[in-house]
Length: 110
Image 1: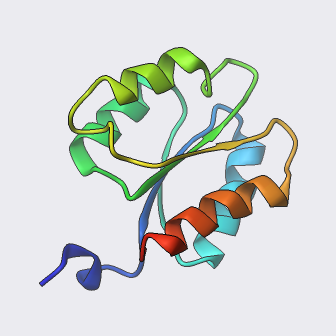
Image 2: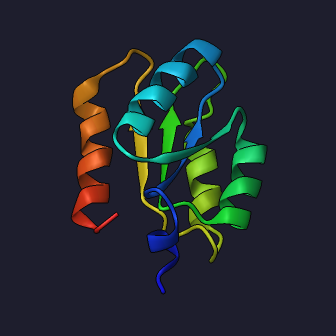
């Protein structure tokens, strides 16, 4: 049995260093059927991504640079995380960019 059939929906890792935007993004993703795990910094996000292998990673480009290219390069540099799709969420809430991530997930059968 596929592991996703045992869960409520696709698993998303949200990397966001801002509590208010994290709450908004979490609520939106959950309303789309995602199981959301949150990380507030790149180090904990990398650990979570390697341990739980989410179906997609949403990165909020925040004040402290959690969406920085270095973090993405690190994800792509590990066999456990290089295949995970990444969607960047802008500093200001932009539904069109979020939909790109949601569309990518839907197209992959999540």
